[in-house]
Amino acid sequence: MACFIVPMSLALGIGAIRKKIPASFHINWLIMLLGGGVAALTLEHIAHQEVVLYPPFLTAMSSPADTSVMLYEMATIGSAMLIACVVIWVAMVVYVSRVEDGKSKLKHNRVTPE
View 1 (tube, rainbow, N blue to C red):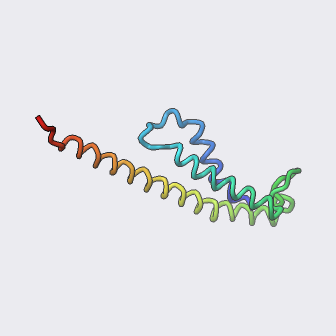
View 2 (spheres, one colour):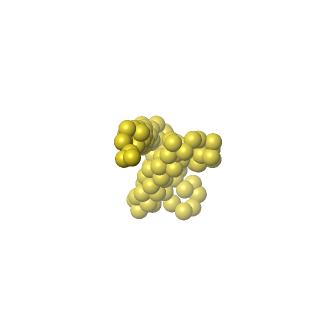
View 3 (tube, rainbow, N blue to C red):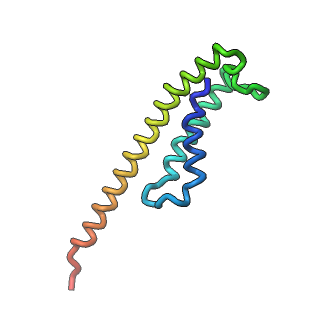
């Protein structure tokens, strides 16, 4: 229903402070991972009429019983999606940093002909 709100919140928060984060963390990758997932889920929720273009926008907010289900989904599914995206991003950053370290070691160990 509204699981996409959790990763969207992180993407917006990180986007606001991204200039303060070192380039070696490739923070734009995380923002793109989160943003792509949010965009896909938003379209899917619109297609299933869980998100509508008129108030209250989230159909789950029309009744208190549905709102509690929505909050539970945000806490479980939304958090799981957020954690999965962050784990994938961390793996990507670690991999790239190791590849770059390997390339720099090769450069320094290379014998130049005289």
